[in-house]
Length: 477
Image (cartoon, rainbow, N blue to C red):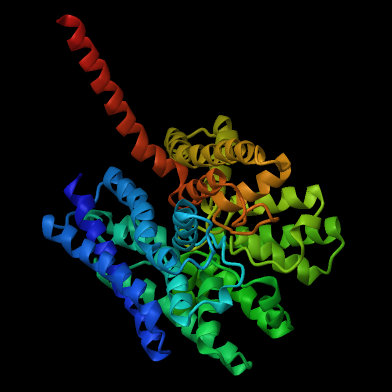
């Protein structure tokens, strides 16, 4: 394997291991001795694997290919190691060993990808240390640890462009500073909102803190009964804010906390807000529900958070189609939201506008610029087409479980966009094969299908070439 990938993967495993120390400390505080064993094993696996990989190779800059491979491998290896506490405790009451392994991997993948599907019917009864660990898996994936690692080891020549993408004018050529800046900003949100909820009377610090993390990262949601305590006006407004902050790009959050209010509302943010407002109005009329209920569910699914308190199974087909579109589009680039991303829609719309205006452009320089912008929009077009192709194919596969195609489309849209909302099909009782189908969808949704193609296509091409070469040699003898 490429030395760049091994070294950076080692650093990523070390980061996960250090974060796992937090739930271990929680276990000591609450005297959860039995639960400390799997957490210790998990921390040792992360740290041991990380130090071993780092010892093998020198950390180097990542190329596009190696960055894609690292991203793909990270969301396979992290959940596999992260499944250890679930395997040890088996909160699913699994029927056999294979079912136990599958359920544990499912819960872990759902956490690291910030999807939020869960096979644990009542997570509130979990030990506090495990609750904290469960939420921290979302931080590892949701705050963008993998992305940060990729950015952290990028070539210095890429810094100005990276700064432009993130919306930060001056990175001071110091990616380490940016790494801690991002963690600090989302850490501030977690602490501030946990404090506000505490002042409102939610005094169980662990339960409130994990709920804030889950809402900000777009991960696990409390069950319907537990969520009833958050249905008064003040908590709902705070939840809306958390979901919005988790779905907007890092530039918005950076400029907000830096006091640069004039730079907050970029075209991407404005379009995202317009989509949510328009969709809220449409859902209000389609379903004949209160506007605040409509707004809450639209923001939840558009931000790919997946919290809901209305019965989604009772929604009309038109409303379900609207929700699938919202989940598929998702939030902003470089945020904790999944989906296609608003930036790709902007790129597509801009290139389409240039394409229409090209015949009326007289200047050769303007024509050349227009051609360049249209060419640069090609990856966005491919990402959108691949996403919807995967959505249809996976929905067809899921529908063989005995549910309608519309129902399957919603479930797979939720998985591919890492939303985690379900109309009831995704449960611990579903057949084993379909559980793995959902897992594959969550991973693809997190790393994006373009990345999967970038990693797997060259691999299979090389394999085919080797077979063809071998076949040719065998025929010559």
